[in-house]
Length: 235
Ligand code: HEM
Image (tube, rainbow, N blue to C red; front, side, top):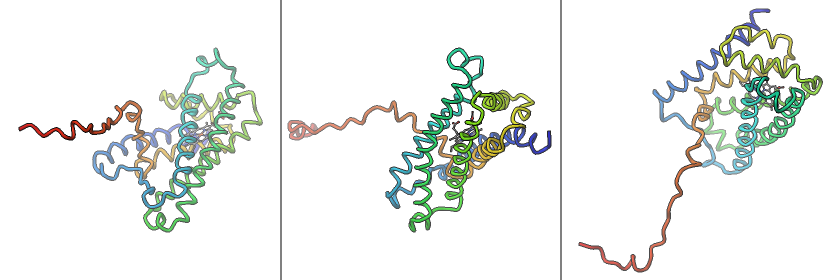
């Protein structure tokens, strides 16, 4: 194995994750008021609703699929689904939500590049994040065509072994991805790079998913009744 593979698939994931966690913590601690999505909806609503919603629905579904698909041990899912069927499921679900995400991302990128108000206020990093996400998404979607060439699930098993070795801090992870197509490799390295740059860009808002919103109490708005309105205040 060459030094690049060992670095990219065994060491780089830990560097990226360490920067992601420590960098996010440091930004929260040192520059709390820069912690934001950098939303430009106030400047222009055009394209934002469709672009943002399609992108977020797509990316959240794809990443949820990655978590379950890559990290569920073979011994657990083999009772419910065969390896070739699991691969097919990942290709179909990932493909559908990947395309939804792609449509949203293209709208957002087009809006950022063509709207003069957004161009004037946005930063280089704002555009870079969208371009990197687009590259990552295209690599992911391209990988579906490569996966279609080996439907027995053997490559998927190698990729899941790699991911499970990394999250359980085991040596030998890089061995699993040595022989896979370069598209999978590029997708993994760019995915790690997105984690690496997150604390320094608007991607940091991934920490702020408003889950509490689902359980927050409803805002109670009562109409003033006429009697209450006419009541004179007690002194
Ligand atoms: C560290 C981050 C990431 C890693 C390690 C990763 C890894 C992978 C792997 C190994 C596959 C192939 C799965 C298989 O064939 O069994 C894949 C597929 C895919 N990835 Fe990623 N990925 C990452 C981030 C992303 C992101 C951020 C996006 C979207 C912007 C994305 C979009 C896709 C899509 C659309 C596919 C094809 C459909 C699917 O299998 O779900 N990935 N990814």
